[in-house]
Length: 418
Image (cartoon, rainbow, N blue to C red; front, side, top):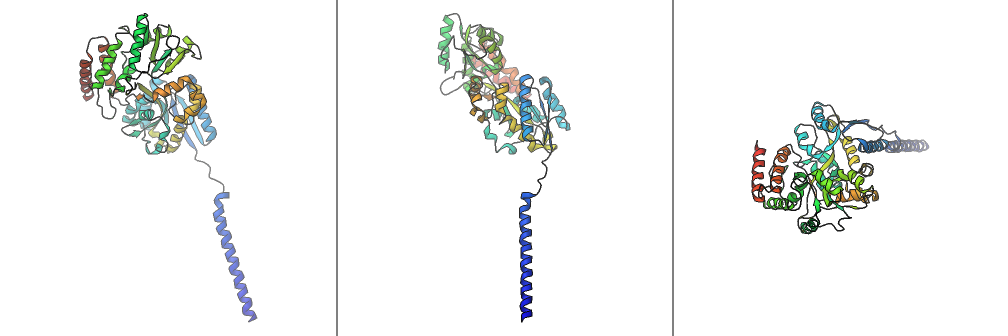
């Protein structure tokens, strides 16, 4: 009996020992991920091409340096390419596996670059955060429902006012015509702008739904009732402005105090500071007058984007390239606004007091809420060949608004079929 008892105790001790070993082993397995050395992060090489120079390039470099500091596994090469060569170099290089993973450029290149096979569809990859961007800007890098890049900044015209000549800007066209009459009586101009330029006059057409060219359907609304009304607005401006009004004449009239208002974009700010002082104390930038309370002016807008090329996918760095593009166009857009004066498309940028408190940036940001990205398809060339001609003929009194609307639509449709 004593021997049996001894044997039982021995077995029990053995079982307990085995159980303890199993528990220790399981605990070690469970705890291993906490204490095991973490694998080194994937080494990533990204090449980005840009045509930005001067202060814009310096701002981009600072942003890239910030990103590298947070992500030391990234090797990011910035290559500067002259603007007049950038698009063609991308089209030539990327389809054969050369060139950049990312590049900066205007949104209206999108269609041609997609056609050339240079861009990659990132729609699914950005679905979680695309709502961070101004919707109108995001449309600029979208073609037939697919997103090919991320919007970084925008450029578009707004109303620029000399407050010494006009204390209260007009909110509607009716108010504008009244101001134009008052200044005409003094031998001056209430508003000067390049009326015959289809880019600047787009605000009346698109405000009335009379689009020049739909990039998705390649249809035009130039013969719609809204287009006739827009052409009538063009004709009315001829009562107040010189027949040879041009961009240079507008600049001369406004800078020399002969016009109280102008319609122009942020690229004019340097000249304005030279003429009116660095802080632009006498300048107000606000919305272009609405056609009527139900129809805001909707000017053409250019979106500067960070495009993602098919190289990023084929080189296995697509997610990493998108992460960098998201950083540049998102969080870092605050620094680009502060350093380079860019008008951001990332909505949270306006929460930074230095951005929202900048009267130039905030004013163009507000106008961009009504902005319309220029068509981003190759067929835009036909649009630019046709539309300006008819705007000019109406302004010069050579065609009635009704005849111009009908003829412009017919000619553009015919050109698009060729």
